[in-house]
Length: 219
Image (cartoon, rainbow, N blue to C red; front, top):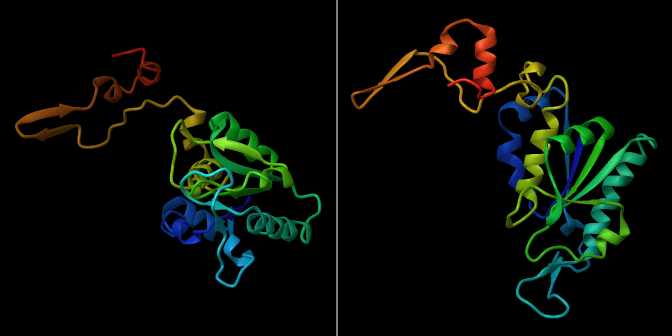
């Protein structure tokens, strides 16, 4: 799986992709992450890619052509390697389709390449969405400063579906009964004079009761 990210701020991904599971997945070549900066395709010598919005309003809008050229660059790199590569383009928008586990599994199963278009400021000129077949996706009913955080979330979620990324593929919570509460040693914790114990059912060794507890059917 290769993730292609169109963003004005590729450095925003450094810390998250450079740690823990995703870092190891990249090093083990389970996933690849490539960046395409619209500034590299700016139409003036100052690398400016934003302009005032038509119709008035606050903020600035990212021009369509620099973004379109960045997307074309990503697509051209795929065609040169494998003309049959399955690719999906995702555009992050608060008004888009709700991102969830079902969507993750579908995308992970069907596509080899995913292009993320990350907006900033007041957004990207909407004409870019008419130039390419892409899908508007929202990671939640809220507004963020840009599409970089949503892209990280989607990369993380999809990567979990790729065998070899997690140390134990069966550890995916979405594929098993998992309680929102988990416990580990020691059995008894003491804090400010009060003792906190692990639920007895988890110490019982009774697998059926433990599974029922995880489902929330036992107290």
